[in-house]
Length: 265
Image (cartoon, rainbow, N blue to C red; front, top):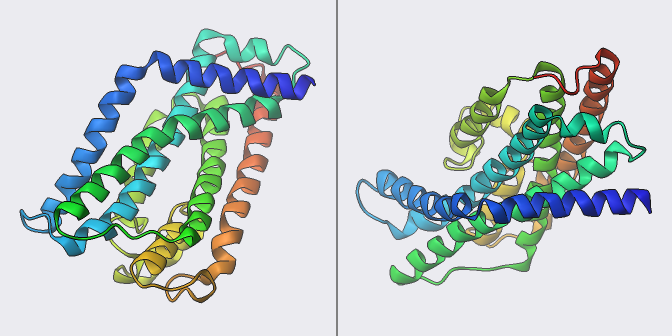
């Protein structure tokens, strides 16, 4: 009961924060779709070319989600540290796992509106160009992999925040790295092999984006993905990232508690 109540309280707190910042959320729901259209225009040399709308859309939805989810968890954690709220929660018998899980769930929910706004914009643009937005239920698997892997990345960044404090630039650089070398805007198959290897290995969204492109653009099934490392890696990679994130967070959390620095910034 303690775990469940703590988890529910963290989810509620995160969603209340999202509702309170509705103006910011609305602005992001406008700017990210505009950014998507600008990218397509840039790649299409000033034209919304039909053959670019869907490939770029798949990567942009994943990039928007990871940006929103990671930043919401990170800044929420940082705000609790600065206000002293985080230190107070560790003085209660509430398991820290409940706090972490609640924050992750709230961040995932809060990240969805902006990602869906990008998706809706892309769908409308495809229809206006005379196309039909494709859908295949199989894409739910890579989407779930993206969500899970992103949560693991957020755990690592939050753990680093407990110990090293001022690491805001890391979150921004990481998202920039995913945009440039994570296969979100340019397929990994078109990149140098070493970069593609590292991206498939470490970037939470890379296998999922490749799988969605294979399914929606190539008509392939989950069991016969021609690019990337196949269905097995699509399922295993997010689990490994979450496990690594949990281990890293646990060690850094223990270090911060031992030093007594949970409330310092």
